[in-house]
Image (cartoon, rainbow, N blue to C red):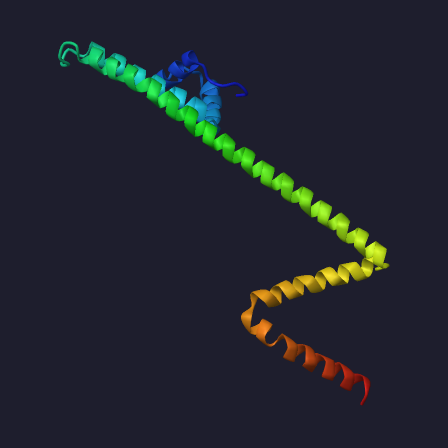
Amino acid sequence: MTRHLDAELAHRFIKGRLDPDERRACVTHLSTCAECRGLVDEERGLSNLLKLSDDPRHPEGAIERVLERLAAVAPQRAAQRRRQHRIAWVGYIATTVVVVLSAWSLTALSRETERVAADLGISPTIQRQVLKNLDALDTLRSDAWLADHYTTAITLDALLTNRGRNP
């Protein structure tokens, strides 16, 4: 189903008056569309309310009181839904702005880094090696033991490298 349910289709769905293909399409659509699930719930509530009005066990005026309460609550619920939608949209927009600005700043930083490296005559291969080493340094900063023993490890590495060259 590519379209949303209308009140008439929701009513037929609740009453079981759809052919199997229509019902399958509605069930599939309702599994992904909160708006239409809300419409079906409202239709179900109205249908139940109409059943109450035919029941002789209810005191006189009970249905009218229920309808008055519903009429009083409906604007509040609508305002609450609008407020929730606004909050969600603000969150989506803020997230999008952060993502776009982050991507833009990373691109600008990358271009600036490439420009400085080109001015200094550093080849792209050397640039990639430096970036890999920066990642390693970030790892060192995040591990306290490695950060404390970094100079010892570098000195040891240099001694072993020199010993390998000068037997």
